[in-house]
Length: 92
Image 1: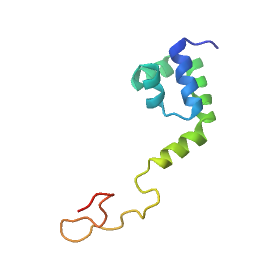
Image 2: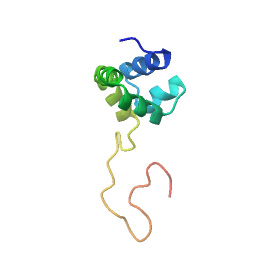
Image 3: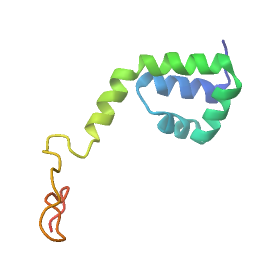
């Protein structure tokens, strides 16, 4: 199935491992516009699903890199008084 250039850019970015928000930004539209297009076109919805499956490993790795607790111990308590036990990289 042939799509216009925005649809092609979205599918290419999703296959590279980008999220829908990143792919829609690369095409110059909002993610809500992509959602409307997916809802209105079964062919495009199928192509988006296939592209997301292709880029799943890369997307998972990118999201893991941005995770705030990557390489750190997650917070496990409230701390004392009003100060949290963990400050997420900020100095208290």
